[in-house]
Image (cartoon, rainbow, N blue to C red; front, side, top):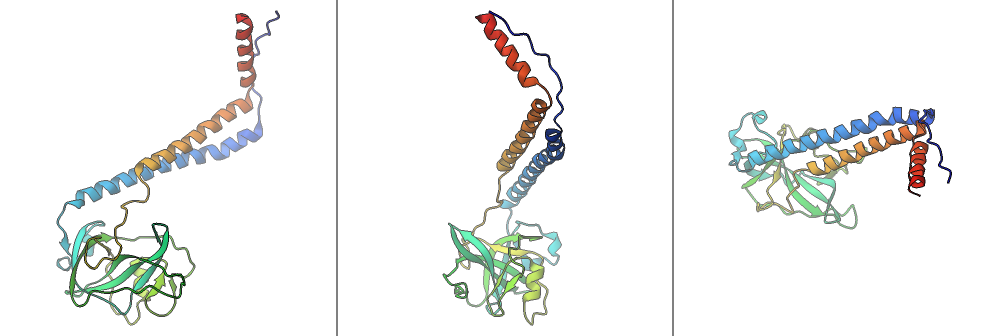
Amino acid sequence: MRVPGRTQFTLEFNWKITLVTVLFLPVLIGLGFWQLDRAEEKRQIIGAFEQRLNLPPVDVDTQDDAYALQSHQAVTLTGSFNQQQWFLLDNRVRRGQAGFEVLVPFYTSEGKWIIVNRGWVKANALRTDLPEVEFPAGEVTIRGRLRLVQGDLVLSDDVAEGDGWPRIVQTERVLILNRLLEDFDHTLWRFSVRIDADDPAALEAGWPLINTSPAKHIGYAVQWFALAAALLVLLVFANTNLWAVLSSRGGKTTADQA
């Protein structure tokens, strides 16, 4: 039986695949490292939250400097809700149902104005039919955790909808809410407060600490790196006759065994 000769390894330049590799390989690797950075950020957030989890709550009225406090810190507030002007944060979904989160200016006994997120309410079938929300009467003490919103996703060109109250909004950034309040000569605190789920003034409260776990970010990073590796393999096979070399060696081995 005739044994085929061994194919010699040669370079066969493929400019199309090479161009694709030059353009996309840095992007894929960069996305992989970006996901690793995101995973580390989430670990730091979880670590900071766990450190503050068992700390006693701070009475906001004893704090003159809001910058001395930190996000996720447990706090208590004593005062009353502004029942005349409050907001419905749009595009909030729970259990597959569309709804709003109720954002209410809260006036503390020492004169601070703070936005309190009381939690979620289900939206009615008609958007113009806004949900009714009950408020606790008089002065109350509530518990929650501080939240600093530095930027969020706005799904509409207008941050507010309608002229009456409550007003539908697309953001919970305090600076924007402050401007929307009418005849309001006060400055809202830089932090908002997410009310505790077991607080009597809470609606349907309780929020995940993070939307994506560190493990998921690492999984995404592995996917990006795998795509980068696959692109490199494609580059090698497209620019050489490696496949022919491997095939010829496989054929020779089969012939030798025969």
